[in-house]
Each structure stands twice: as structure tokens, then as C-alpha cells.
Image (cartoon, rainbow, N blue to C red; front, side, top):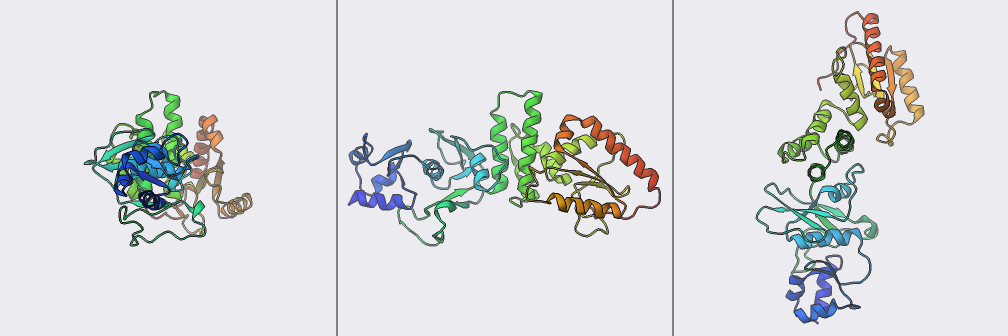
Length: 354
């Protein structure tokens, strides 16, 4: 009967059970070892955590095992939490699962589980493995499925909010990189910008939450996150837009444009960057980031509408931003000068403050 009880408990934890839990159901140490014998019905996942089945482990089993190993209150963070939050531009989840615990919890890294203590443990959010839940609704929080593990729910894994996941993923990745070459920094900043912009653009995290997490993060590994945060706060919503901002800020002619704000007097159009006093717009044609945005036909219609209203639109591709930055900057500066000569009359309108 003890074995049956252990399987009942494991059922609410996706087939996993800890050694302490197995003993609490009445199994003896020898019975546990017998179940774990070569060819037996159980397998070790990580020290002190067992799967009550054989065969390969799915991602949910590794995530569950990480939480069980770290103990009550543990939350998945870092790359895996970005993935669980639906973010596409986070670091690729790998073998290691990062888990956040309270500072009072004493747990060491074990196997693929990397434990991080914090004095700022956020409130848990829950990721649901929808692949297996298509015909079954999640269990309500107030329902206790097993008195030995009252908070456990099958196919539901606790994680940090998206803003914390983003910043932890950045800091954990950057603080462990041994190489800090200029090429690395450029590529890393591009990836960090893409991730932070995506979190805001897709409303996975608010700008306020991102700012709070970046400012609270440890200094080591957060330098590039602080650079990217300044871009997002300025209004940039994609990595190429951030690179355009870098370019504009090097100019002695161009002031800071207005980023991603509705045009005055033009309904439904929000350009990437514009100088309203000059009626000049620069749009970054970033299909990889804005794949869910305008189709080519809509883009053509919008630009024709802007031209009819007297706006000059300069499209710039991310590839050209990176391969010919000086040429792109010269083109924008020339357009800005020309617009200044043409529109020397009072400003056609001002944008609302950003």
C-alpha cells in the first residue's frame, strides 16, 4: 500500500517524488532503492528527486525536478522562465535550470539544477504545460490534491514574473561569460535589446517592472541591461531601433527623435522615429521582430498616405544599419537639413511628451 500511496502523491507532481516525500508515504529506504535498481520502475532525476517511470524526461519533468530539489517556494528563473513566459528572444534554454529561492534557504547546485538565493523573492506565477492540458482545465488553487503536497498541481510549474526572468537571464548569462571582446559585447547588446524590447512590445512586462528589476540587479552582468533599459525608456521597441538610436546620438546635427509615438494630426500611424518639426520619419524595416506587424501592402499604403501629407519617410533595413552606418547617418542628416530649408515656417504640431 505504501507504494500505491507514493504513486498517488507523484501523480500530482507529474510523476516525480522526492526521497523525503517517499519516506513520508511509508516507503522504506530499501524499498526506494529497490524501485531505483537497474531495470526497476523508477529512475533518479537529480539527487533526492526520482521519476516514478522509466524513459526520457520531458522539459516539464526537468522543471518540476528543479523545483522539488530546491524546496518549497522555489521559482524557475532565467532562460527557462523567459521560455515559459513566451519570449522568443531570450537565451536558448539548455541543460541547466536556474531556480530562485529565499536567502534563508540553504541549497547548493546539484546536477542540472542551479540554485540562486535572493532577498527579493517575487510572488509566484504559474506556467501551465498546455500541450498536455488541451482537454483538461488547470486545478484551482484552493483545491488540495494531496495533503502531503497541498500546493502541488499537475502540469503547473511556479516561475518568476517575466520582468524578473528577463533580467535574471541577462545577468546570469553575462556574468558567466569569460570573453569580453568588442565583438561579443556588440552581439550580446543586440540580443539583450531584442529581449527587453520584446518583453515590452508584447506586453509581457511593463517598463516600470523592467526598470525596477534592472536597478535592483547586481552590478556584475547588468551593465548591458542598463544600456538597453535606457533605449527602451527612450521609446525604442526593437533591437534595430536601438541601433538606429546609437547612430543618431553620434550625430552633431540630429537631435533625439521621438520614438514610437502617434503622429500629430495623423490617426493610426506610429512611426519608429520622427522629427515632427521637420516632418521627417525614419522607419526600420525589421521583419524578424515585427513579423506580426504590417504586411508590405499596408506599409506601402501608409507611406503613400504620409507622403500626401507632406512627411518624408526614409526606410532603413537592419542589415544596412550594420553594414553601412556612416552612409545611413549621412542620408538621414541630409534629409534633416533639406527638411529644415523646406519647412522653415512654424512647426506643424507637437507630439505629446514622451
